[in-house]
Length: 186
Image (cartoon, rainbow, N blue to C red):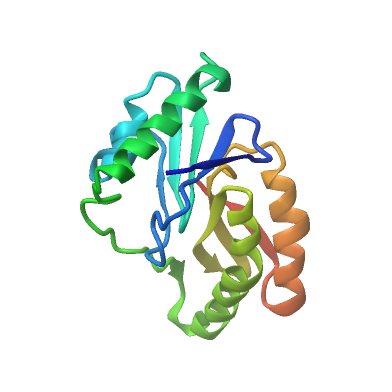
């Protein structure tokens, strides 16, 4: 099994591509700590390594954020070994499926929310996934779109600028009802 490794805009995060589906079309899973990873044998295994601070599972990739203690030179081979061992054993990525949160919005805004989600799915998420992360819709109230950044995008120094100058401008252009975009935690 060959696993490719790519850097991300977040210097603390590396993207691992195992050459097979991780989450496939089941969405994404973001684990900010070992406790949150209990439903994922893969994420739990990665959190068992010293220095792992966050794990994100994408369609065909895994991003791992290190805590800054040991550095990637020591941690990278351990992460590669854990991922390879997991997939070679045929273990599941998740033990259970989580219900995806539809977000907080007024049902009268369903058509607007559908437009926002379509733009996020077709124009934003593929680009963000290329950098080892994801962007998740969390709500729309009074013209303000609430988005949650996951994976390499969580804590990335350029994430706020990407939201304001990229995502916000694009959404305002295509959906006139959008006044602003805000980042939310979870």
